[in-house]
Image (tube, rainbow, N blue to C red; front, side, top):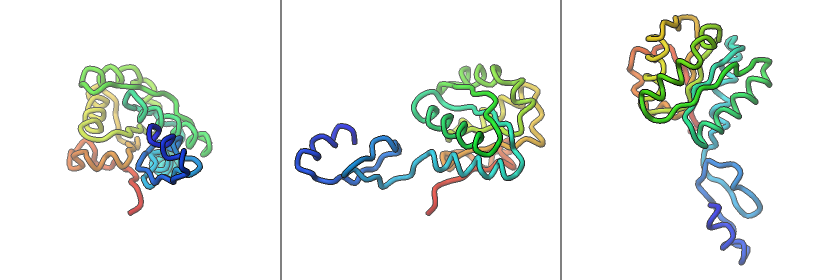
Length: 167
């Protein structure tokens, strides 16, 4: 979208773009896509409504993790809660284990763990948490629409909740 916008702007041609980056929208550039901030917000507003006041976020490195973290912080602050710790990981098991180890004490005292990534990440992260000796009963495990690519039948995700886009 960023590359095409200047070429279209020369003639005043509007663009309908498919991007999850809100920052690329502007005069004559319209987004026809979901914005991850909205899904993060819906998940955390639900959790806050269920009593979650302290959340540990475990997010992937990169732009998607940056967006999820920023919106999680905004939403929790708005609800009177807070993101008490953030851990980042790359897409390998050792990185996930390191990320979890870095926030184990924060998870022990948190009301919820927020995992805005899909695929194998949610189950791997929750398994890493429980293997670290942390009791997850009573804690909310939260995700986003990225979880539609996860194995939701995995027992470690039982009771977890996530929001997706409106259809």
